[in-house]
Length: 301
Image (cartoon, rainbow, N blue to C red; front, side, top):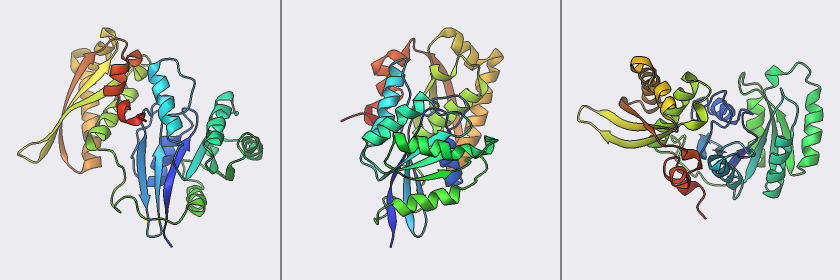
C-alpha cells in the first residue's frame, strides 16, 4: 500500500514553515531568514520513501498586506490551500496566539481540508504545559484539525512523529514525481531565491522587502560551467548603493556566498553574473509583480 498526497503549510509569517520543510527534507530546499515574509512564491518540496510520497507545498505566510506585493503573496498562500489533501497549520509555541493565527485558522477552516496543528519552536518554551492550551484554542477556532504535534524544526524534536501523522491521514495513491526529485522548481527559480536569501542576511533593515531577483539568462558554457546572469531589483538609488557596497565589496560577498550554495545545490560549477537595477515602487506595480516576482503563473485562474 503506497500513500501519497499534497500537504500545504499554512501560518502567519515567521512561524518557521520553511525551516520546518528543510528540517523534514534534511536538505535546504527553501530559503530562510529571520525577516518575516521571506517566502514569496509557492514551492513544492517532494519527500519520497519506499512507502509514501509527500509533496509539501510551502507558500508565503498569511498576513494583512500593506502593498500590492503583500496582496499577491496572500493570494498565493490562500490558493495553496485549495485542491490538496492535508494542511499543516503551523503556530509559534514561543509566542502567544494572536489575531494573525486566528486569521490563518479561518482560511484553513474555509478550505474544508483536514488539518494537522503543528506547534513549532518548542525548544524555546519554558513551560510546556501551555501546549495543551494552544491546542484547545486552535481546535475551537478550526474544528477540521485532526491531530496536533508539538515539534522543533531547529532541533528535530518530534519530526518523525509529525511525518507519521501526515502519512496516516494521506490517501493511497501513486508517485507524482520521480524518486530523485526534491522540488518542481527550475534552477532559475532556485538561483534567484538563494541570491535573495544572501541579500537578506547581509544587508540592512531597509533592504529586505524592497529587493527582488530576476534571472535574465542561464546557459551552458563549453567548459561545463553553468552561466547565470541575474538582476537584483531595488526601489531606490540609496538601496542600490547598499547592495553594491563600498568598492563593490557587498555585491562581491553576496555573489560568492550565493555561487557556493548554488554549486552545492546543483553539483555544477557556476559563473554568477550579478547586476543591480533600480525600479521605483516595484512592489506596487502590477507589471513588476507579475513578471519580476513571477506571480503570473501563481495566481492565474
